[in-house]
Image (tube, rainbow, N blue to C red; front, side):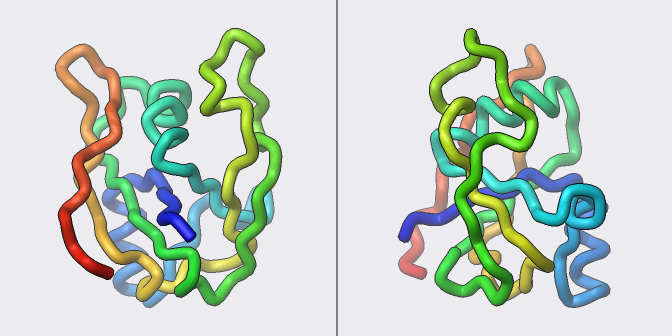
Length: 126
């Protein structure tokens, strides 16, 4: 199974280190943690995080998750004019994210015009 990705403010990731698990605000409000595929991550960031800084992209190995993973239609449906990558099913984690499932943490900053693109992953065997 391919990696999945979660966009996180760096302060939330720092807090997760202290709690030994990651709990996005959406877990309390919607019952799951929003994630994306590699193809969905940048369009999601551009749609919902435009121009925001101090973000991280958590690279998650679904095999290592201790909470259930489910593929659902978008929680916040995109307009019909949105890229196809925003119209498919999205990975959602139904519970806390165990930190050992996060295999890499990448800086996820927009370019000078405020747009995001998918970062280059390290060539590491996981």
